[in-house]
Image 1: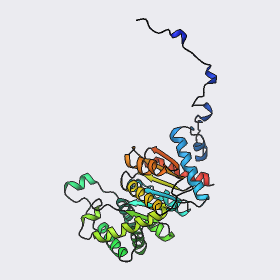
Image 2: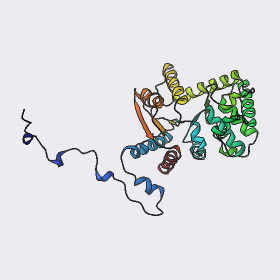
Image 3: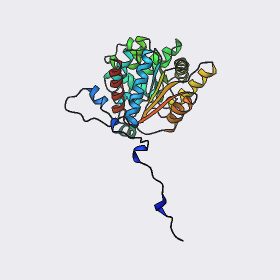
Image 4: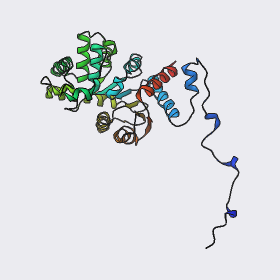
Length: 312
């Protein structure tokens, strides 16, 4: 059977084609000593660099319009030294709400207590000493019990304790700073996942009561996201995406138009729950979803400084 006659293929002038890549969007070479602004403006206008600009602009616009900017963070964000950057945006009233998982509260406390955190899990697991630091469980579980009796959420309970005890490195604490400034800072716990649950000082009723109070507070934050708010998930693969999805559902059930907001997810690998429960499902009624894959210790400083530049 003879082959097809390729000489009859139809062609068109290259100049008439719509091309997706144009040299005007290329990166601009830097030079020694340039400012961050020059570096940022010199990034190529493609893919993740374009997405980074989109998120920064959405945060700045939300701030200017007094719309909520919610950052939901996994513990790793705190462990890699990013609290000072988040605090910078909290103090400037750019980040208007913080949500952490239980491990995030533990690292936040330990940093406030002694300026360091994160044990060697593999080494400590061998002899059963993993998670057995006395002050961590005693002070955190005590704060949660005391706060629950007052009807406080877990975030306020820990933040208030850090301030009351005047812990030496409390300036590093997200929970203490938010408590001081009246910024919603919530902690969302799954029982059995955190080292303070290993101890006899753990009170499941108090932990559950305080975390449930924080969930209800978070629903209030989420209910106001519509029409220009921003919700970011940074480094939480399970807890915060699941909590956020339920908060969106409740807010909509109560009549709040949670749509036309920007949702972004930063993580080192793409995960199912953030992709579905933070980005895709909540924005189906309207909104923008952005996913950028990379290390927190690189992405978060880039984003924060980009926001600072655009604010000024």
